[in-house]
Amino acid sequence: MTIAEAVSTRPPFFVSDIRHLRVMQREKIDYPFIDGLRLLAFLLVFFRHFNFFTVPVLHEYGWIGVEFFFLISGFLITRLLVTEFNTTGVIDKRKFFMRRILRIWPLYFFYLFLVLFLSIIYPGYPVSVPRLAGNLLFADNWISALKNYNPNFASFHLWSISLEEQFYFVLPFFVVWLQKLSRKQVSLLFTLILILFICWRCLAVWNGWLHPYIYTLPASGDCFLAGVIIGSGFYDQYLKKIHSSVYLLSGILFLLVNYLIFPQRAVIGLNQIPLYFFIALGFSCFLLAGLYSGRNWLISALGHPVIRYLGRISYGLYVYHIVALIITFQLFKGGLAAGTTPWSLPVALLITFVFAALSYELLEKKFLRRKKKYTVIQNSGT
Image 1 (cartoon, rainbow, N blue to C red):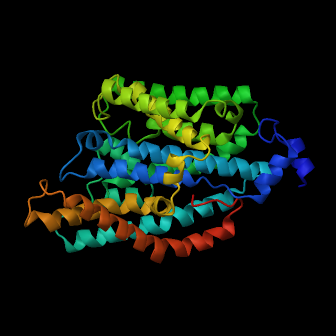
Image 2: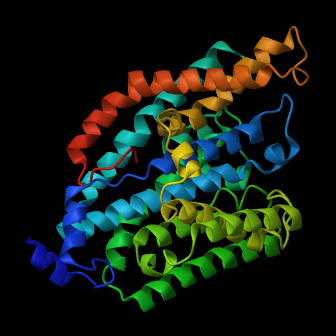
């Protein structure tokens, strides 16, 4: 397909001119500050699970880090798919799924093998075979919604991987569908999906379905949807008109209001209906502030090489941090009382960083190199 043919077959709001299309063909998608956002998302989750001594706000509200991960993933992968479609005229779904498999599966299944091995050598951690099957089939989020979190050793947080894989399965088909619609139709579709999520939460609240029913299911998918909306590019020409400082302050305000007004996600009630929507608004504003801020000290800090590396291994940080916390507890429980020593924090973080870095260098990189074979649009680590 020639450039002229590509332009003639694309909606005008996706590719504004031939020069823009040439840029997409020539350059890779790279947002250095997003690696910093990934690291921040991990740290929120880490402090949520860090029970030795706590910063109350971070411990109570750190679970939103998972939502931040969903928004970042939704944005980056949608932007890549849209760019691929605008550049080549199609989305190669086989290559897309191979890229996702090579990025997610090696670490995921290695970790499952690791925790299964640890469960065997430590008799105090029995294995639930149905829950292990749920992990293997990427259905653990649905089982968690109905039966509570996974009781298997260091596996309760893996429901999020199942949910993300389910989003990935739908996303390339959804993005292709979007290309056939006008902006008005796309706006209506996004609105209907959001209403579906809200109605699903209303149904759960009405029936008194307990936590984590909403949290682990697509009913809480506002952040992923927000990432898709921003990544689709339909609204770029409007979003970029707002100053980055407005986005930053608005994001802080949305999350602050959410924290002060709505009870925690485990409290089943009317709070569950707007809770995820406000989180999506807050994190969307942070993402947009980075996208349209240009160069400043904050963006430079988030894109620092060290921060970028830690953000690049954030998948491993998320997966391994539970084991690192368990090891830290074992180290401190016999001597200094766990919960009273500040040394437990740097030790737990160090163990997590070491595990994730070793996994990235010794395991994940081998598959990431193979992933390049299926890469259509160059990017920095999705």
